[in-house]
Structures are given as structure tokens and as C-alpha cells.
Length: 332
Ligand code: ACO
Image (cartoon, rainbow, N blue to C red; front, top):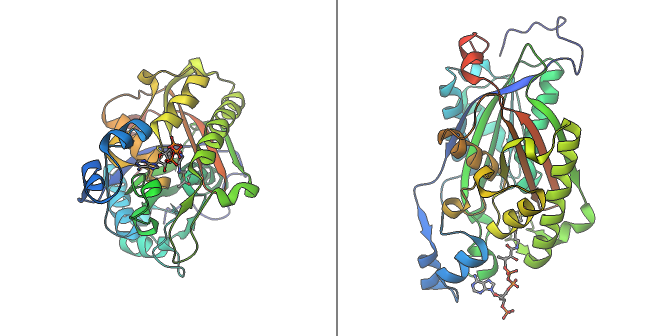
């Protein structure tokens, strides 16, 4: 655990936080559209045109993928599990009903702080990011957030409506207390439980989905939530350097981004290679953009997701100067 002594913690809400490192994990097993073409009444052309997905990865457990991504994020900042005060694992595909998947990941990474799962479906990572900022404002020093999923385990591989869409993977970030107001400029978390039957999976069962209605609702809530976060941040879409949307369907992303006035030059997408990885999709797309050098210190980045529940979440962050934070010793 970090050495922030109890009793000298700042008052709630008075200190900021920022992402200081990240990591990802994907299973080795690549499932292409041609693989589905061979088994189901579908075609590569249909899947590509209707979803933008070309391939996805299947395999591993949620805990194993989360551990790999989490370890990569710790290593990138020279941290160990001892440095983490809380592990927040966003997942809608936990390995066990009891206990939390976070408990296995915590053990594997040597984290001795608190650990819990958070299920807000595909909005989970952004929910976790906002929760982490809240925990740090309340006095914690570092929170490891992981979005990890094995969607293939809850997908009926004989159902062409859903089988083609989903994949497995994980993405992790370390969020750390800063001396300034931090990176989070505005956020919006929402849920409309009356829409929960649009997409669900009973315990031990597989997903069923009203794809058309999910599509329609998704575009609406993404735009509404993005605008709410921008307003809270005192920013407009023109100010954004990058938008990282939930990776469900390229047509949903394009429709929402058209309404927001965001072109593909300011859009992060990985779904052609990953499919919909639910809680993992936003960190996978974010890390892909970071690795490609598409984000600079000071840039405004919008993360926006939607998912079963129906839930939605967005956040506007000012990208930190990660090198300066690491070399200032903040992460040591
Ligand atoms: N291959 C070929 N045909 C297909 C396939 C397939 N894989 N899947 C469906 N079809 C057929 C349908 O059966 C239908 O045939 P019919 O006209 O004879 O009945 C036809 O294609 C058109 O079906 P639609 O449902 O109208 O197709 P649509 O353009 O809406 O695309 C899709 C379907 C891709 C599922 C789309 O609706 C979608 O992406 N919806 C959102 C799904 C989503 O984002 N889910 C994740 C939410 S996040 C979370 O919380 C996990």
C-alpha cells in the first residue's frame, strides 16, 4: 500500500488524479469473419458492412486477461502491487459468482489494498475511471482500473445475431493522485433500468439482444452523454483532440460522431481487430491511440460508452504529461 498516513488525508474532493500508465492483453486465438462464414449463415461482407468487425480474439479467463493487462500497466510505471491502494475491475463476465474476479487478480498482482468488481456492462471502464477519481479525492494515492472480459463465454456461437459481434480482452490504467486539479474535467454517468431487457444474459446462460433497438438507443445516449460531459468540462467538440468511443459497431460510432461533428481523424477505433470487448473496449482503443502517438500532453480526450442496463458513461480528460509525472517521482 502507499504510505499516505491516515489522518493527514486531504478533505474529500480536493485533490486531482491522472492516468500515469497503461497496459493491455488479448488472447492469442484469432477468430476471423471467414471462420464464422464456414459455420454460420453469414458472410464476411455482411459482417464487415454491418459492423466494421473483421476479427476478434477468443480465450483465457477474465482474471488471466485482467492480470496480464494490470501487470503491464504496473510495469510501465515501475510500480508493484504494493503501490496500489485499490483495484477496481470493470467486467460483465466475472469468472465466478462468488468471489469477485478482482480478488484473484489482486492476489496475482500482489495488491493488498481493497479490490472489487464493477459491472456497468460496456460503460464499465468509464464508470471505474470516475470512481477511481472519487477514491483518490477521498485520500487514496493510486487506483488500478482494469476493464476485462471473456464475452465469448456468454455468447451463443450458433446465433449469428450475436456470435459475430463479441470478443475477449483487457485494458488497464493506473490512476494516481496529482498536486494539481488533475485530468478529469467533466463526466456523466447514467443508466435507464427500464431498458435492461434489450440485452441480457442470465447467470450461467448466453446473451440475447434486440440489436436494432440497442443500436437506436446507443446513438442517442452516446451523443447526449458526450454533450453533458463536454458541458461539465466547459468545452465543445471542437476542443477535442481525440474521441475514444465504446467499440460495438462502426455504424453506431459513425452515427454518434457525425452528430457530434467528430471526423475519423479524431476517432480511436480497434473494433475491426477486437470486436466488441465490452468493458475492455475503451481502454484497448485508448492504448492503441497512445501507442500510435495520437495523444499529446494537454490534449482533451473524450471517452464515451454505452451498454446493457441500459447504461452510459462519458468523461472529458485533459491528457497529463505522463513523462513529467513519472520523472517527478510521483509514481515512485
Ligand atoms: N449475417 C447475415 N445476416 C444477419 C446476421 C449475420 N451475422 N445477423 C443478422 N442478420 C440478418 C437478420 O436476421 C435480418 O434478416 P431478416 O431481414 O431476414 O430478418 C437482417 O440481417 C437484418 O437484421 P438487422 O437486425 O436489421 O441488422 P442490423 O443492420 O440492425 O445489424 C446488428 C444487426 C449488427 C446486431 C446491429 O443492430 C447492431 O450492431 N446493434 C447494436 C448491437 C450492440 O451494440 N450490442 C452491444 C451493446 S454493448 C453491451 O452492453 C454488451
